Amino acid sequence: MTHNLDSLFRKDLPAPAQPWSGLAAFNFVGGNNDAESVPVADLAAAANRVLTDKGQLLATYGLGDGSQGYRPLRDFIAANLKRRAGLACGADDILVTGGSLQALDLVNAVFLEAGDTVIVEEATYGGSLTRFRRLGVEMVSLKVDDDGLSTEHLATILAELKARNVRPKFLYTIPTVQNPTGTVLGLERRQQLLRLAEEFDLMIFEDDCYADLQWTGERPPAIKALDESGRVVYCGSFSKSVAPALRVGYIVADWPVMRRLLPLKTDGGNGALEQMLLAEYAPAHFEAHVGALQKTLKRKCDTMIAALQEQFGAAAEFRVPKGGIFIWITLPVSVDTSKLAAAAIQEGVAINPGAEWSTDPESGRNSLRLCFGSPSLQTIRDGVARLAEICHRETGIPVRGANVVRGED
Ligand SMILES: Cc1ncc(COP(=O)(O)O)c(C=O)c1O
Image 1 (cartoon, rainbow, N blue to C red):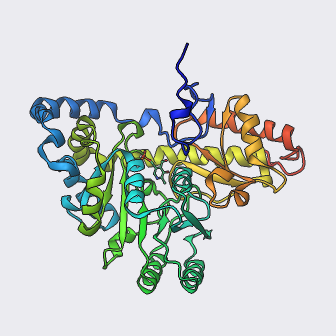
Image 2: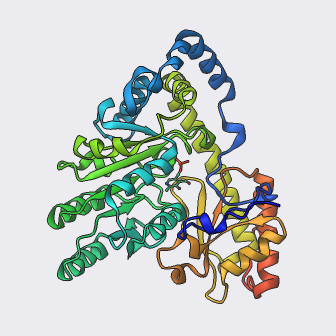
């Protein structure tokens, strides 16, 4: 008889996991990347070189570089942030993490306790929402428009919180290719945001994991690059630019925060091979690789937009994303996308229902997120057509023959 451990488990655990049942045939969820774009040959050559030259470093925890990560990788991250995000920092300001998910956990662990308040974009990364909810943190929802978060709304929120004597722990924002809206916060708003942060003594947690995938318009400097008072903590990742399975992300923080983060990182350091591999691969190849990846992803994005227009017509409203791997779509209010997602997965189509990507689940009830990074162009076309069929059958939307634009006619 199997021993029943239920009475021993903590009472506040999340719902138990289900065994892995594989990816859906039309998989429009998850931050997966384009498989053909993984630079396999260059990565293999880099792995071979770095192991041959420096393999002995594996004998020492942290590769002999202490608890912040492999020094040559941190040097690359610093140089890359200077070049691409205008952010001047050194290797000592950087902590390598297990993807940016570990960065989220560490920053949350340093700042948040149950009952604290954070300000969060109204639609945001589901992984951050579940974290804030588990921590018992109060979320205040911040409006996002075509140009990213609304600084006007932020000013109102900050004044209201101040009037109630509530000091938010931080604003969590994804300013560059926002997940899920695909918007980019422009330079002027970044400056306004920092002025407000000064006025209200607000800390900002900038999650920039998609910034290398911005292909429309010029990439603005990171908010942290404009920060003169050490009030921005920044995190980034190689998941979207190189490969998510490598699990390499990083935090950039000034020492007053860094010295609080380090004692909480008790895992003995992240995997050495992926750090060594990236440090060897990236200096010579990162720029060209990311340029090519952006072109591939833009083609997939264009294909998904065309499929949505063809299959859903005016029923699907969305902004054209400025980069990244997803589109945030709003359907008529009669469509509950959580129900749609449950019906669609039975037929092999996986989508993110908007409620799971919204600070206020009700406001995202008729929205959904579709990821286009990993499916092929044909899978995108077929999957969107299948989704439209299911949606029509379940909800009557899109109305066939009425509002569907087909090709050129
Ligand atoms: C906004 C945002 N932050 C963090 C992550 C975590 O990514 P990773 O841990 O792979 O860097 C994701 C993943 O999709 C994300 O969308």
